[in-house]
Image (cartoon, rainbow, N blue to C red):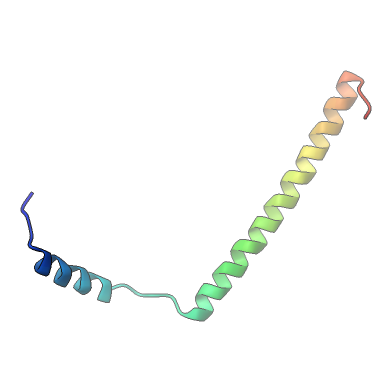
Length: 65
């Protein structure tokens, strides 16, 4: 692999970073809210699934807590 001096490397990095399409503040906020909503939905799903499996296993083993 060819070595590049630090100055050239810095120029290349700046050139590549300028090509990136950065999200707007609004897009970032919407995406963050969507992530929190999905985490909430997944949490509720796994809570219900865990409770149902625990209840079912309790019935199978005859252990009522």
